[in-house]
Length: 440
Image (cartoon, rainbow, N blue to C red):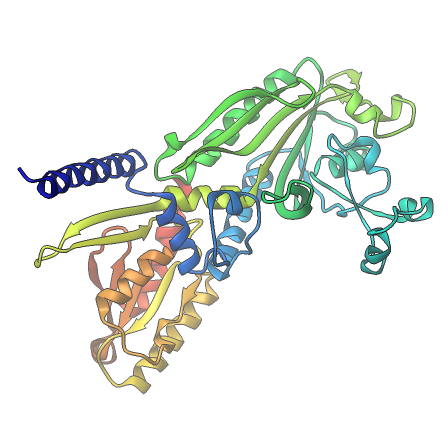
């Protein structure tokens, strides 16, 4: 065998091994890769930005697009429902992003900000004492707000323990530059926090309870629940910390943290005698311990996008491989429930029917995608591919048959089956489907 032929065989073997290794990795990750996930998130408007990497996405360097923002709203709604509708004695608050005295109580040092016009002078000299006192303090977590509001919430509940304080809000975190470690910038993220106050005797039990509840909640909306797991770690001060993590294509990343603190969390916050901070646990008056659950909403959103992404490869008639990507997002979290589009028929009349159908669905709180407004003709299969990548649950196709008999075609994202349904029954069917999915 000649040298060129031998080199060709070796190169072919290496290529085959690399292809086999890539296929094994895809199978282990459920057919998804990090490139598949990030390309789809950028291409379909879940995340905004040109250059994306796992580090940049997890670091909060990208804004949410229209579909990402709507899905985030759905995720936050489900979190609030889990905390307030299905749990007793949980009160919501909405604290400020900066509060006086946060530097004395927050578990992490707060961020200080100055007006823009100070920055030029600060490049040559540090801030004055007066400027240090007037700097705004940006929170890095939501723990401070709950501890701050504890006395008023305790009075509202007639001083009865246990109870919790829930909040969703923006937090800020310093990030050191990758290229230049001396540079630092601030990233924004949305945190969802529950601070639970109970007696020292029952604190460990409540910690276990909330860990089970939160892990079940994350798995409830997942296609592959086993990708969500928990493990014990230690924080910077050596305290036990439990982390709920998700197995992304590039590895496991934390999405929620759960820890506990003794009664010093409150006494260090409120410089008053301990008696006003006591709550009633049965007949005893006790100073409560704290269980704190804090999740990062954007990371949870990315986890569900990764979990719902399914990529399949089929061989076309001409021997070419075709890849089909679909976001099988849980119905409760899907940003768009139904897309309303047109088939064959008189365009003006069909648009009027679609407009009326969209108004009816929106009136019942069902999010729609008005595909009928598109002026360019798109082949039906390309249309379905686009909606699958957007995570749209159903596609309603209105055609000239609808004008004659009121029947339309309803295509399911998960089964790809098209069934015929009368237009008057569509909203009831969708409501029934969403209600059933929410109870699972």
